Image (tube, rainbow, N blue to C red; front, side, top):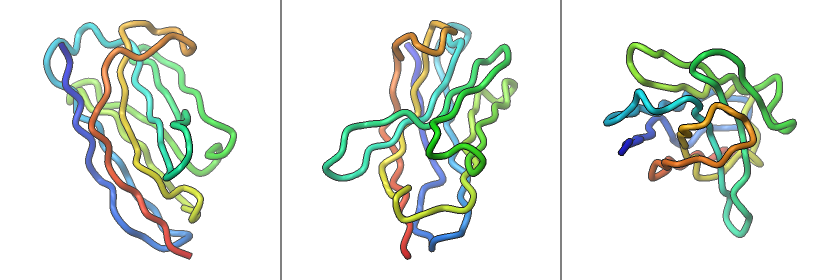
Length: 120
């Protein structure tokens, strides 16, 4: 099993920045890809960004150029740097990990989520 713990959420104003962290523990050697998703009130969960532990990343169009996903393999941690935040970025952000490196494959493990609130 793999456990994921998110941190770094909070309440900020539009234009501010936040960095989310996702720390993995357990059978981390089985993880090949980690992603961030978000869910706003009354909306479905949506993909934000993903990174392969080997190389390569992917972003949703809505966050391209503003968000950056990165990883520290030694710390088993993935980060989501969020710049130029907008009120529409308000959501609970979830970290997810997959045993499959293909970007389209399902995720096997999920964190509990961290709240990000952006005020105008």
